[in-house]
Length: 442
Image (cartoon, rainbow, N blue to C red; front, side, top):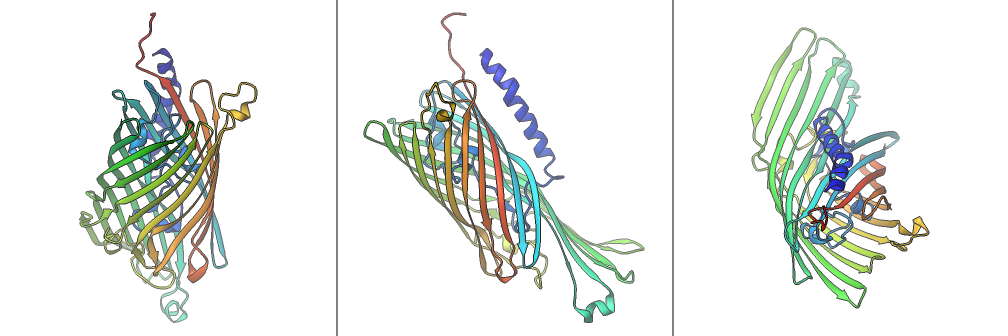
């Protein structure tokens, strides 16, 4: 246990403290920045660790005893006996925005995940962790240019800003039957805080401006179940079929809505209301994946996920609908069906090579296409990209550092929409140790 204590004190404990600090600073900083996060609960995060993200986000059917795979609760049983595993990652989000002739850019950083897994009894194991679900971060302005209006009132400007995020803490367990069929389940607790504000201001002091806003406190329990069936193909190859289902999650938090009139003399409260989200919920999700693996050298996986948000109620509830009113420069938001197709592969030339270090590295690549859970003015918002990554072995056993890159695009320049070109980077720390073992000599 001495080695286990050193690993925990040097690596895992600082990661826990950094995660707590990051969650505490979530209301003051941007975890992600995109104008599309004005709608619903914000911009949905790509699920998984740096290991998953470097392969296009696949993992529903992946079984790997060297890495934690949180995308399928059943995958927790793919491990060496008596092993303790931990994963901590960070990601950096870099975007370039274009709308018509306007351009801007953003750079943000946030935690990716903090997960630990350990065995329970024989072929069963348990996992605990915290991962981001969504992030809200935006800021833009719009000036009224109609001469017939500004001739009477002076210049009018409209600004909007938002920040915050939703995280999910989970505890899960899995068990393997007959050495081929693995099943697992997770309890998920979604929590977070989102702040959105909208301001109208007049250059003419004879007119009062107005500040509208919403503070959304989110609490939503949910669950997730998964299974994996692994079929051997000869001596060194196998084919694994995986499936997952995440339950819908009714929001149990509260929505604070307000409207203030601001002027040179005084500020008046025009409206202030505290309410529960009511019929608003996070949508369920279904996923299926197929993975082919050859020995400890090569694997390729194809995943498909689908999530129907049309009955989530977000496009009809104050605080979730985005802009307060429709009009020029303000898109209308309606919920839709989100789908994603993901492809990823991994190649390890020779994991046990003692001469060339580069042959022991796990190289990965992937590609994906997905559409968001909403429509803007009736138009779908799609994104696509490619991923690259590698895990560098460190020390002994399965410890390593994973680096991943994601190059992609979301949206288009049609109908006044915003096109995002992004370059995202992630780094993950994979910790592995043998715990719970009995030594022959003390």
